[in-house]
Amino acid sequence: MIRTYKCRVKLSKSGHETLSQIFGMSAELYNAGLESRIDCYRKTGESRSLYDQYKELVQVRADLPEYEAVSSIVFRGVLSRLDKAYKSFFRRVKAKEKAGFPRWKNRRRWRTIEINDQCWRMLKKQGDKLVLKIKGLPRIEVRPSRELPPNNLLKAIRITRKPVRTEVALSYELPTPEAKPLSNPVGIDMGISKRLTLSDGETVEKREIDRKKIIRLQRSVSRKVKGSNNWRKAVSLLAKEWQRVSDKERDYLHRLTAEIARMYDFIAVEKLKTKNMLRNTNLAKSIQEQTWGKFITLLDEKAESAGGKMVEVDPGGTSQECSNCGATVKKSLSVRVHRCSCGYEADRDVNAAINILHRGLTIAGGNVTRMAGRMRERQADVGPVRPRTVYGCVN
Image 1 (cartoon, rainbow, N blue to C red):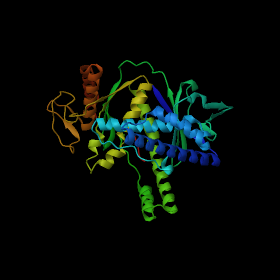
Image 2 (tube, rainbow, N blue to C red):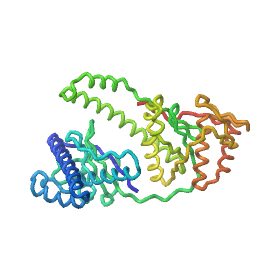
Image 3 (spheres, one colour):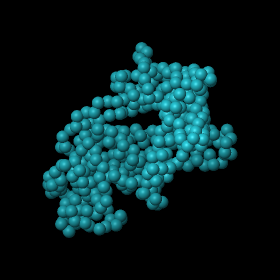
Image 4 (cartoon, helix red, strand yellow):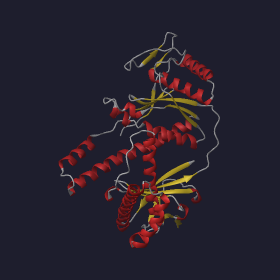
């Protein structure tokens, strides 16, 4: 399994300037490679391959000293990125999706260096410091927040300049842990009024972004003349604020998913089609704020790392179906309590989470009847399952 460790770095002022120059050179190479592919197709009806462009890179580095001074591995990553964009374009065309041909890159907007070859040779220990040494790049001191895996497992390095800081992402290929037996399962219903509702009654509060400062900074950008120095400064301040919000959310999701993965060895979640849901203009902003996609991605990674398992199930009808007897109880979105003629009563979201768990257990080959019986025994002891908030999230 591939796991990525994001680390902060220490760079000198001249190091930041050198990095900016290499970003600009990367954008120029990308545009030249794109132009080469377009011209080749117009003249011959065929496109250049990645290895053809690797050969062209040799000639470019021979003719231009500034490119020769930087490791060829850095620029191979640029051409690989172009090749990936081309393949994605043709894949979307074949699938009859909105294609989106690769676009020209602006020097100011290029902020990433990708290295996918011989990475283990570039990360070195110097005393008690960890340093990234790549030909042509400045000295980059890496400051990890936790212990890193052995260097021989390092497969990829990504250096990214963000509005607030520069980061290094180190990707390692780690052995997959042994799977745990299915003994402590949970179903998770994702919503807006409550971000998450678990089948055992626990809930996670919805995410609420404090937009006062963001709105003020956005108005400041709108008042400036586009392209002016003051406009660029205002845009930078707005980007930094959004980066802080994003970092806070990412940290929260990491902690939340790690806690869930530690508590449960089998997790069933909804397979939501978020793009379709965003067509509802009244709920689009609230849906985006909950970042369900990021949550599911991180939860899957955390569960796999802990030896657990996560499955996605079809969410259709989980709110209308009775988790006790299986009957369909039609109700509008405003009805928050599920009541069935069989006598079962529970919070609407808890009932949906139990149904999601049942479907997940069916996929995994678990015993649904035994799980349903366990839930009924619990309700007989403590009464109907009601949601209780255990995690809060306010940005």
